[in-house]
Image 1: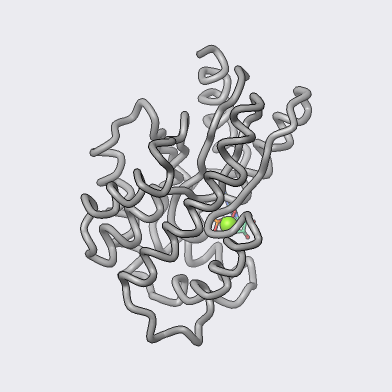
Image 2: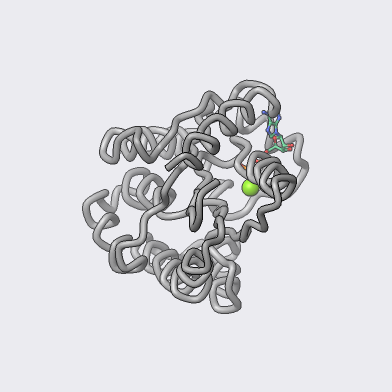
Length: 210
Ligand SMILES: Nc1ncnc2c1ncn2[C@@H]1O[C@H](COP(=O)(O)OP(=O)(O)O)[C@@H](O)[C@H]1O
Ligand SMILES: [Mg+2]
């Protein structure tokens, strides 16, 4: 891998983001890298407090715009506090969700508008974009089965149901159509973790050439 790469992992809940991020981190560590591993929302002490508010099922009165701005607030903090300094030191940063999630969830699925979200994303990150984004694509039904197997209770957004997850999936495809496949690599996430990682690895190695 080259210096200072920012790589994000995207897709609906249960698609396998955290699984592939962990395999990627191990792969890079075996090659002598020390990637910074972070998750959105969260990853800073302010961001983790915002995460708790966002995912708390008791907060069912939260309006969609509040939700959007809280995500962007957490993003601004992690970008300034963690991601930019780490990239400047030449590290690889692996992030479990980043601004494409806001595009898909709040911009598209919640209907707040993808243009509004794009400008807030730009504000929050001061123009920083991932070098590479993996979009793990899967049907909401298959993702639901995986989440059930994971055995954790659902958070506020996961509890929204299959119809909402289908909208989020479409939102991600819209992000791909808007941004293009140079940054966003769509990967069939219905395969085994090993098969999926073979594809991830190919893109990682390609990115390392740049
Ligand atoms: N390719 C796969 N095939 C089958 N099960 C998987 C695969 N990838 C992940 N899982 C399992 O599905 C569940 C959800 O995966 P996870 O990585 O937590 O998804 P996400 O972080 O996108 O919500 C976990 O129990 C995980 O072990
Ligand atoms: Mg996860």
